[in-house]
Image (cartoon, rainbow, N blue to C red):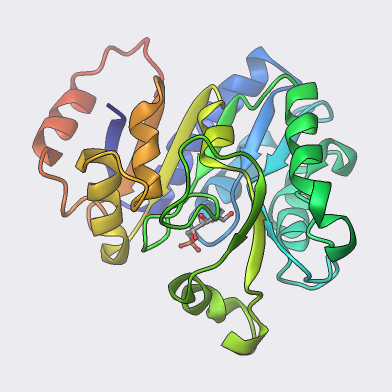
Length: 259
Ligand code: F6R
């Protein structure tokens, strides 16, 4: 099962995950990071700003999880823009090494296969950062997604469009389609780190970690991964049946073991 780490708040989660990433980069300067967008990973990126300052990160590579289809990459809410603003620029990464699925309508037929090829050519993702939607999606793999799926176009649920409307002027501006790494793509990363904060994510987290493996809850796919870490605050942990056991396990973890 996934290792669940319950922390005090999002800041503590950011510090924990950032430390893991710093150690990864120290051991492998051209590490391949799997980058999520949305609000959840922001404390990680914030913590990385301080921890990576002054280090050579010129070799670090990255692959975003997903992108909206048909949204101008220059739009402030395209994931290309978000990754540039929140990750590439503040961390001083080389933009040529950071990939985002291509959501342009003209090339969408082969954009998924192209992205899979690029991930393969990089040797796969070392550490994949994940958030989770209130409907249990990871990446933009909405309920019903195949556990074997690869990067492809998906239709966003109305729930996800409503959740993401806060980033746009109105819900009408939220695209209906996205291109996302598949669950099968995500499962090929060597280490999955799923973060979630707040009560609104509690049910999705409990279902993903402790519920049955099911396409209706795409996040449950992490149960198939040999090295998955779930970092949650108390509110997001509030529906976990084994919360006390996770606390006990983490408190007694050998100091030589990372997350
Ligand atoms: C974003 C992504 C999504 C988000 C999820 C949660 O790249 O893949 O799965 O992680 O929608 O979004 P937030 O973090 O905004 O609650």
